[in-house]
Length: 345
Ligand SMILES: [Zn+2]
Image 1 (tube, rainbow, N blue to C red):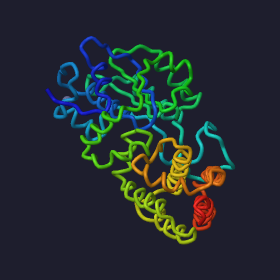
Image 2 (spheres, rainbow, N blue to C red; image 1 turned 45 degrees about the vertical axis):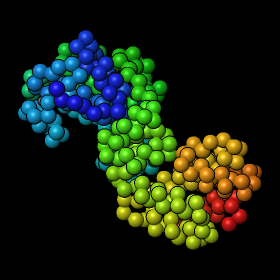
Image 3 (tube, rainbow, N blue to C red; image 1 turned 90 degrees about the vertical axis):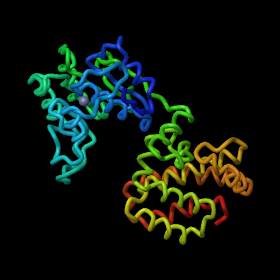
Image 4 (tube, rainbow, N blue to C red; image 1 turned 135 degrees about the horizontal axis):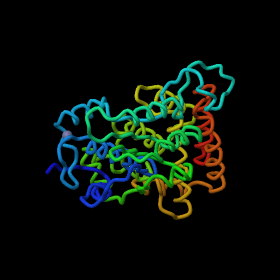
Protein backbone atom coordinates (compact mmCIF):
# COMPACT_ATOMS: atom_id res chain seq x y z
CA UNK A 1 0.00 0.00 0.00
CA UNK A 2 1.17 3.50 -0.80
CA UNK A 3 2.31 5.52 2.18
CA UNK A 4 1.07 9.03 2.56
CA UNK A 5 2.95 11.72 4.45
CA UNK A 6 0.72 14.39 5.85
CA UNK A 7 0.93 16.68 8.82
CA UNK A 8 -2.55 15.62 9.95
CA UNK A 9 -2.21 11.92 9.39
CA UNK A 10 -4.70 11.02 12.14
CA UNK A 11 -7.40 13.15 10.53
CA UNK A 12 -6.62 11.51 7.19
CA UNK A 13 -7.03 8.10 8.76
CA UNK A 14 -10.35 8.99 10.31
CA UNK A 15 -11.70 10.38 7.03
CA UNK A 16 -10.53 7.45 4.93
CA UNK A 17 -11.39 4.44 7.07
CA UNK A 18 -13.79 1.80 5.79
CA UNK A 19 -16.66 2.84 8.07
CA UNK A 20 -16.62 6.55 7.25
CA UNK A 21 -19.01 7.64 4.59
CA UNK A 22 -17.78 11.06 3.59
CA UNK A 23 -20.42 13.74 3.94
CA UNK A 24 -21.51 15.80 0.97
CA UNK A 25 -19.86 18.92 2.44
CA UNK A 26 -16.78 19.07 4.63
CA UNK A 27 -15.38 22.15 6.32
CA UNK A 28 -11.71 22.08 7.29
CA UNK A 29 -11.35 24.77 9.94
CA UNK A 30 -8.31 26.05 11.80
CA UNK A 31 -5.45 28.56 11.69
CA UNK A 32 -3.33 29.11 8.57
CA UNK A 33 -0.35 26.90 7.90
CA UNK A 34 -1.50 23.80 9.79
CA UNK A 35 -2.13 21.53 6.79
CA UNK A 36 -5.83 21.96 5.95
CA UNK A 37 -5.20 22.43 2.24
CA UNK A 38 -2.55 19.69 2.18
CA UNK A 39 -5.09 17.19 3.50
CA UNK A 40 -7.90 18.56 1.31
CA UNK A 41 -5.75 18.12 -1.82
CA UNK A 42 -4.89 14.53 -0.87
CA UNK A 43 -8.53 13.75 -0.13
CA UNK A 44 -9.74 15.29 -3.41
CA UNK A 45 -7.15 13.26 -5.34
CA UNK A 46 -8.26 10.08 -3.58
CA UNK A 47 -11.93 10.80 -4.38
CA UNK A 48 -11.11 11.43 -8.05
CA UNK A 49 -8.77 8.41 -8.41
CA UNK A 50 -10.28 5.67 -10.59
CA UNK A 51 -8.63 2.68 -8.95
CA UNK A 52 -10.31 1.02 -5.95
CA UNK A 53 -8.72 2.35 -2.77
CA UNK A 54 -8.07 0.48 0.46
CA UNK A 55 -8.88 2.30 3.71
CA UNK A 56 -6.30 5.08 4.34
CA UNK A 57 -4.73 4.55 0.94
CA UNK A 58 -3.99 7.74 -1.03
CA UNK A 59 -4.76 8.29 -4.74
CA UNK A 60 -2.75 5.86 -6.89
CA UNK A 61 -1.01 8.66 -8.78
CA UNK A 62 -0.92 6.57 -11.95
CA UNK A 63 -4.44 6.14 -13.36
CA UNK A 64 -5.65 8.52 -16.12
CA UNK A 65 -7.68 10.44 -13.55
CA UNK A 66 -4.69 10.90 -11.22
CA UNK A 67 -2.58 12.09 -14.13
CA UNK A 68 -5.05 14.85 -15.00
CA UNK A 69 -5.40 15.72 -11.32
CA UNK A 70 -1.64 16.23 -11.19
CA UNK A 71 -1.84 18.56 -14.19
CA UNK A 72 -4.45 20.62 -12.32
CA UNK A 73 -6.96 20.20 -15.16
CA UNK A 74 -9.31 17.49 -13.92
CA UNK A 75 -12.71 18.08 -15.55
CA UNK A 76 -14.52 16.80 -12.45
CA UNK A 77 -12.71 19.13 -10.07
CA UNK A 78 -13.29 22.82 -9.40
CA UNK A 79 -11.29 25.13 -7.19
CA UNK A 80 -13.10 28.21 -5.98
CA UNK A 81 -10.76 30.89 -4.71
CA UNK A 82 -10.54 34.67 -5.00
CA UNK A 83 -9.34 35.67 -8.45
CA UNK A 84 -5.91 37.23 -8.34
CA UNK A 85 -6.96 40.04 -10.68
CA UNK A 86 -10.48 41.02 -11.47
CA UNK A 87 -11.65 43.45 -14.09
CA UNK A 88 -13.51 46.24 -12.33
CA UNK A 89 -16.08 45.41 -9.72
CA UNK A 90 -18.57 42.62 -9.84
CA UNK A 91 -22.24 43.40 -9.26
CA UNK A 92 -21.43 45.69 -6.39
CA UNK A 93 -20.52 42.78 -4.18
CA UNK A 94 -17.16 44.22 -3.23
CA UNK A 95 -17.07 47.64 -1.65
CA UNK A 96 -16.58 50.23 -4.35
CA UNK A 97 -13.96 52.74 -3.38
CA UNK A 98 -14.16 55.36 -6.05
CA UNK A 99 -13.72 52.75 -8.75
CA UNK A 100 -10.65 54.48 -10.16
CA UNK A 101 -8.60 51.28 -10.37
CA UNK A 102 -9.52 49.24 -13.43
CA UNK A 103 -7.80 46.07 -12.31
CA UNK A 104 -7.57 45.19 -8.69
CA UNK A 105 -6.83 42.01 -6.85
CA UNK A 106 -10.02 40.57 -5.42
CA UNK A 107 -10.14 39.06 -1.99
CA UNK A 108 -13.59 37.67 -2.60
CA UNK A 109 -15.07 34.80 -4.52
CA UNK A 110 -17.38 36.26 -7.14
CA UNK A 111 -21.00 35.28 -7.71
CA UNK A 112 -20.10 34.29 -11.27
CA UNK A 113 -17.66 31.69 -9.93
CA UNK A 114 -20.39 30.12 -7.78
CA UNK A 115 -22.76 30.09 -10.77
CA UNK A 116 -20.17 28.17 -12.74
CA UNK A 117 -20.03 25.61 -9.93
CA UNK A 118 -23.80 25.34 -10.02
CA UNK A 119 -23.62 24.51 -13.72
CA UNK A 120 -20.84 22.01 -13.05
CA UNK A 121 -22.99 20.46 -10.30
CA UNK A 122 -26.00 19.98 -12.56
CA UNK A 123 -24.15 18.86 -15.66
CA UNK A 124 -22.93 15.48 -14.49
CA UNK A 125 -19.37 14.24 -14.41
CA UNK A 126 -17.01 13.70 -17.29
CA UNK A 127 -15.35 10.54 -16.10
CA UNK A 128 -18.24 8.86 -14.29
CA UNK A 129 -16.64 9.00 -10.87
CA UNK A 130 -16.78 11.47 -8.00
CA UNK A 131 -16.75 15.20 -8.51
CA UNK A 132 -15.10 17.59 -6.12
CA UNK A 133 -15.42 21.31 -5.52
CA UNK A 134 -12.84 22.88 -3.22
CA UNK A 135 -13.43 26.33 -1.73
CA UNK A 136 -10.37 28.04 -0.31
CA UNK A 137 -10.98 30.01 1.80
CA UNK A 138 -14.69 29.79 2.53
CA UNK A 139 -14.63 33.20 4.23
CA UNK A 140 -13.88 34.72 0.82
CA UNK A 141 -17.59 34.27 0.09
CA UNK A 142 -19.80 37.16 1.10
CA UNK A 143 -23.44 36.75 2.02
CA UNK A 144 -24.62 36.74 -1.61
CA UNK A 145 -22.13 34.13 -2.82
CA UNK A 146 -22.50 31.99 0.30
CA UNK A 147 -26.27 31.94 -0.15
CA UNK A 148 -25.87 30.94 -3.79
CA UNK A 149 -23.60 28.10 -2.68
CA UNK A 150 -26.07 27.05 0.02
CA UNK A 151 -28.68 26.40 -2.65
CA UNK A 152 -26.32 23.87 -4.22
CA UNK A 153 -25.40 22.34 -0.86
CA UNK A 154 -29.06 21.73 -0.10
CA UNK A 155 -29.46 19.42 -3.08
CA UNK A 156 -28.33 15.93 -2.19
CA UNK A 157 -25.90 14.27 -4.54
CA UNK A 158 -24.24 10.92 -4.05
CA UNK A 159 -20.94 11.54 -5.74
CA UNK A 160 -20.46 15.30 -5.40
CA UNK A 161 -18.20 16.53 -2.61
CA UNK A 162 -17.59 20.03 -1.35
CA UNK A 163 -14.42 20.59 0.63
CA UNK A 164 -14.36 24.03 2.20
CA UNK A 165 -11.31 25.43 3.91
CA UNK A 166 -11.56 28.17 6.47
CA UNK A 167 -9.00 30.01 8.57
CA UNK A 168 -11.80 32.05 10.17
CA UNK A 169 -14.72 29.69 10.36
CA UNK A 170 -16.54 31.72 13.01
CA UNK A 171 -17.18 34.34 10.35
CA UNK A 172 -19.10 31.91 8.14
CA UNK A 173 -22.87 31.97 7.86
CA UNK A 174 -24.51 29.69 10.46
CA UNK A 175 -26.45 28.01 7.64
CA UNK A 176 -23.18 27.15 5.90
CA UNK A 177 -21.82 25.71 9.14
CA UNK A 178 -24.92 23.66 9.78
CA UNK A 179 -24.88 22.11 6.32
CA UNK A 180 -21.30 20.93 6.46
CA UNK A 181 -19.35 18.62 8.71
CA UNK A 182 -16.66 20.59 10.49
CA UNK A 183 -13.23 19.04 10.93
CA UNK A 184 -11.02 21.06 13.25
CA UNK A 185 -7.30 21.51 12.69
CA UNK A 186 -5.06 22.82 15.44
CA UNK A 187 -1.43 23.79 15.78
CA UNK A 188 0.49 20.52 15.85
CA UNK A 189 2.71 19.52 18.76
CA UNK A 190 6.40 20.30 18.16
CA UNK A 191 7.32 16.66 17.52
CA UNK A 192 4.70 16.31 14.81
CA UNK A 193 5.64 19.64 13.19
CA UNK A 194 9.34 18.73 13.20
CA UNK A 195 8.63 15.30 11.73
CA UNK A 196 6.68 16.89 8.91
CA UNK A 197 9.44 19.44 8.22
CA UNK A 198 11.95 16.57 8.12
CA UNK A 199 9.74 14.79 5.55
CA UNK A 200 9.87 17.97 3.45
CA UNK A 201 13.69 18.00 3.85
CA UNK A 202 13.43 21.18 5.89
CA UNK A 203 14.80 19.86 9.19
CA UNK A 204 17.13 22.84 9.64
CA UNK A 205 14.20 25.22 9.56
CA UNK A 206 12.41 23.79 12.60
CA UNK A 207 13.84 26.62 14.72
CA UNK A 208 11.46 28.97 12.85
CA UNK A 209 8.35 27.17 14.14
CA UNK A 210 7.80 29.49 17.13
CA UNK A 211 8.27 32.54 14.89
CA UNK A 212 5.53 31.28 12.57
CA UNK A 213 3.14 30.43 15.41
CA UNK A 214 3.94 26.69 15.19
CA UNK A 215 2.42 26.48 11.72
CA UNK A 216 4.84 24.21 9.80
CA UNK A 217 3.35 24.91 6.38
CA UNK A 218 4.05 28.61 6.89
CA UNK A 219 7.69 27.72 7.61
CA UNK A 220 7.80 25.63 4.43
CA UNK A 221 6.31 28.41 2.30
CA UNK A 222 8.81 30.93 3.67
CA UNK A 223 11.71 28.51 3.17
CA UNK A 224 10.73 27.75 -0.42
CA UNK A 225 10.34 31.44 -1.22
CA UNK A 226 13.83 32.14 0.16
CA UNK A 227 12.44 34.42 2.85
CA UNK A 228 14.05 32.61 5.77
CA UNK A 229 17.48 33.82 4.64
CA UNK A 230 16.23 37.40 4.70
CA UNK A 231 14.66 36.83 8.12
CA UNK A 232 17.93 35.36 9.34
CA UNK A 233 19.72 38.56 8.40
CA UNK A 234 17.06 40.73 10.09
CA UNK A 235 17.59 38.74 13.29
CA UNK A 236 21.36 39.21 12.99
CA UNK A 237 20.75 42.97 12.63
CA UNK A 238 18.45 42.99 15.63
CA UNK A 239 21.14 41.29 17.69
CA UNK A 240 23.67 43.94 16.74
CA UNK A 241 21.71 47.00 15.64
CA UNK A 242 23.51 49.72 13.78
CA UNK A 243 22.74 53.38 14.21
CA UNK A 244 19.16 53.86 12.82
CA UNK A 245 20.00 55.55 9.49
CA UNK A 246 22.58 52.89 8.60
CA UNK A 247 20.14 50.20 9.63
CA UNK A 248 17.35 51.71 7.51
CA UNK A 249 19.71 51.65 4.55
CA UNK A 250 20.44 47.93 5.03
CA UNK A 251 16.78 47.05 5.40
CA UNK A 252 15.83 49.07 2.37
CA UNK A 253 17.97 46.81 0.21
CA UNK A 254 16.45 43.79 1.96
CA UNK A 255 12.86 44.73 1.11
CA UNK A 256 13.84 45.65 -2.43
CA UNK A 257 15.75 42.45 -3.22
CA UNK A 258 14.15 39.62 -5.20
CA UNK A 259 12.19 37.10 -3.16
CA UNK A 260 12.68 39.41 -0.24
CA UNK A 261 10.62 40.21 2.77
CA UNK A 262 7.66 42.49 2.42
CA UNK A 263 7.72 45.67 4.44
CA UNK A 264 4.91 44.24 6.57
CA UNK A 265 6.93 41.11 7.36
CA UNK A 266 9.90 43.23 8.32
CA UNK A 267 7.79 45.32 10.69
CA UNK A 268 6.16 42.18 12.12
CA UNK A 269 9.59 40.69 12.75
CA UNK A 270 10.68 43.80 14.64
CA UNK A 271 7.40 43.69 16.58
CA UNK A 272 7.99 40.08 17.58
CA UNK A 273 11.53 40.90 18.61
CA UNK A 274 10.38 43.79 20.82
CA UNK A 275 7.68 41.52 22.27
CA UNK A 276 10.31 38.94 23.23
CA UNK A 277 12.53 41.63 24.75
CA UNK A 278 9.53 42.58 26.89
CA UNK A 279 9.09 38.96 27.90
CA UNK A 280 12.72 38.68 28.97
CA UNK A 281 12.54 42.02 30.78
CA UNK A 282 9.91 40.50 33.08
CA UNK A 283 11.71 37.14 33.33
CA UNK A 284 9.26 35.32 31.04
CA UNK A 285 10.40 33.02 28.23
CA UNK A 286 10.59 34.48 24.70
CA UNK A 287 7.72 33.38 22.48
CA UNK A 288 9.02 33.90 18.95
CA UNK A 289 12.81 33.60 19.26
CA UNK A 290 13.39 31.01 22.00
CA UNK A 291 16.71 30.02 20.42
CA UNK A 292 17.90 33.60 21.09
CA UNK A 293 16.95 33.41 24.75
CA UNK A 294 20.43 34.21 25.99
CA UNK A 295 21.01 37.18 23.67
CA UNK A 296 17.54 38.59 24.33
CA UNK A 297 18.07 38.37 28.07
CA UNK A 298 21.37 40.17 27.94
CA UNK A 299 19.80 43.01 25.89
CA UNK A 300 16.68 43.10 28.08
CA UNK A 301 18.76 43.70 31.21
CA UNK A 302 20.13 46.91 29.79
CA UNK A 303 16.90 48.62 28.85
CA UNK A 304 14.16 50.54 30.55
CA UNK A 305 10.77 48.85 30.48
CA UNK A 306 8.66 52.03 29.93
CA UNK A 307 10.84 53.02 26.94
CA UNK A 308 10.51 49.50 25.53
CA UNK A 309 6.74 49.59 25.93
CA UNK A 310 6.60 52.90 24.15
CA UNK A 311 8.65 51.46 21.27
CA UNK A 312 6.33 48.43 21.08
CA UNK A 313 3.33 50.71 20.81
CA UNK A 314 4.90 52.95 18.17
CA UNK A 315 6.02 50.02 16.02
CA UNK A 316 2.49 48.55 16.21
CA UNK A 317 1.14 51.85 14.91
CA UNK A 318 3.67 51.83 12.08
CA UNK A 319 2.53 48.38 11.04
CA UNK A 320 -0.79 49.81 9.90
CA UNK A 321 1.13 51.80 7.26
CA UNK A 322 3.57 49.09 6.28
CA UNK A 323 1.58 47.95 3.23
CA UNK A 324 1.56 51.37 1.63
CA UNK A 325 4.37 53.54 2.96
CA UNK A 326 4.49 56.83 1.08
CA UNK A 327 8.26 56.68 1.04
CA UNK A 328 9.93 53.37 1.86
CA UNK A 329 13.19 54.95 2.98
CA UNK A 330 11.59 57.44 5.35
CA UNK A 331 9.31 54.73 6.69
CA UNK A 332 12.29 52.50 7.49
CA UNK A 333 14.18 55.34 9.14
CA UNK A 334 11.13 56.00 11.30
CA UNK A 335 10.89 52.30 12.14
CA UNK A 336 14.56 52.04 13.12
CA UNK A 337 14.55 55.24 15.18
CA UNK A 338 11.52 54.06 17.13
CA UNK A 339 12.48 50.40 17.44
CA UNK A 340 16.04 51.07 18.61
CA UNK A 341 15.33 53.90 21.02
CA UNK A 342 15.13 51.47 23.97
CA UNK A 343 18.71 50.43 23.16
CA UNK A 344 19.91 54.02 23.39
CA UNK A 345 20.72 54.26 19.67
ZN1 LIG B 1 -5.49 7.06 -9.45
